[in-house]
Image (cartoon, rainbow, N blue to C red):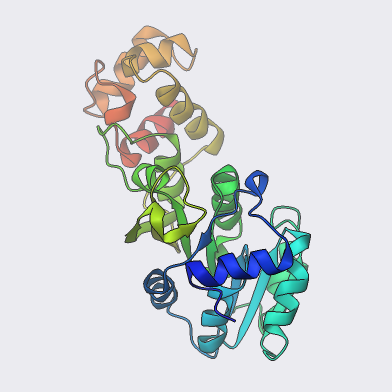
Length: 284
């Protein structure tokens, strides 16, 4: 069964009387070269447990099973489960879970496959757009148990995660994700590598959770409020952001910004993560 080519995927779906589920954002990867890039980036060995989010028709799952000691494949579409059970029947190192990755108890149902509390899993996923942010933050929530995550995302999402201060794509998600993980571009992926073809191109990225944050934040609530306020009012100066959000009166805001060498007329979208942390710490 060739479930990693366009003809193979079309034939399999036709045989089962199935169509890609638009509501679940199903776009099956049909490019073996991209599959290879994903598995290479995952850097898994026979000592590793790999979580695959969205098994689809099992193409990536099988590639991972050749390399990893254990693959935990999660699929939300119940209609695909019988197909996957057939595809995986000869693979003893694949555990198939039917369910929503965001609703699972990761501690029991995912990390339970690890041999030791000190061990970490590797994650691979072709993420539908509608769950991309929730899954990324779920990964970061459990970052102490995760070595790295190789994710297929829409190219615009990758651009936002990799953006630098002052660029159009730099925003709230850039700051919040990069505080907790390093982000790397692995490959740009044409929409033609999927069936059916989505409306936009994609990218493969790798998230590597940081052992420690690059900045010290004294008060998480103040930091979160500051960053959110800055990007919700991208056209406002930082002086006006602080005053309008009642985070400081005008004199205090001027004092904080100038003492840190930050021009009060700068916009938040030009500030680095370090800048945000320093301002938040002075306001705490």
